[in-house]
Image 1 (cartoon, helix red, strand yellow):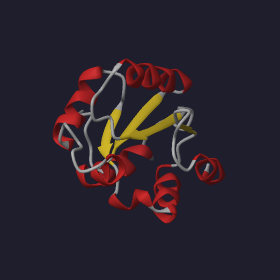
Image 2: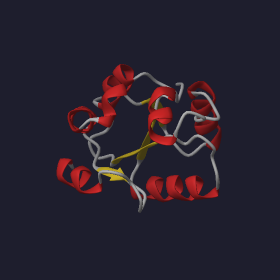
Image 3: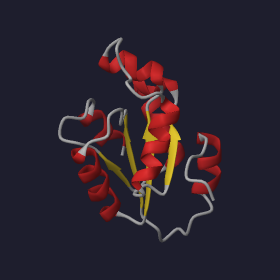
Length: 131
């Protein structure tokens, strides 16, 4: 089975997983992978059984990080994430993730047990409320 999946395929897979498995969701741009990304993802993986990683679209990365980003297009970032061999599934985040409604919809649909975030994640209080 391929690790890179569409959101619709991921939702179908999600509900076929053993209910005893703890699902962890981590999201981000992951544009230029570095040691802290790997450390973060390994820590997220240790929290549960299945690690799902959502990557921001190129458009969202430009919105978040400026017009010179991403350095690596989404296709490369997805492949790089798979090559780390940490995540069980990797997918492109929906474009509306920049909105409160978009974040709520994704969490409600995927229903992860844990949302892995870094110390400097935006919207932390809101993410805690949604979970």
